[in-house]
Amino acid sequence: MDGFQSINPIDNKFKLGKKWFWIGIVAGFLNSLTGLIYGIALLVERQYRKEGLIIIVWAIVWFLIVYYFILPWLTELEYIPIPNQMIK
View: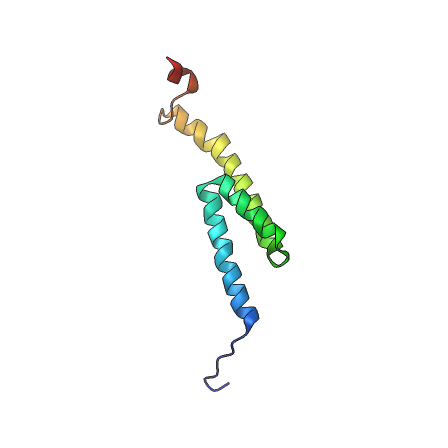
């Protein structure tokens, strides 16, 4: 070993996959639809199916959290107008 660093394509592939996995998680956090589309794209690739499934689940769970908890809370604080008030 003596200072020898192995260049293994599997290690490089894992690092690349891990980077794109975290990009997918962030995309799902910023926009659920983008996370869902990106997760489906990864799900189609055989080597990234597990990561794609995790990103899809994350995007759906994050959407549900925003829709059922954060949006009603922001509406209650009047940061987001209620649709009936927008018509008047």
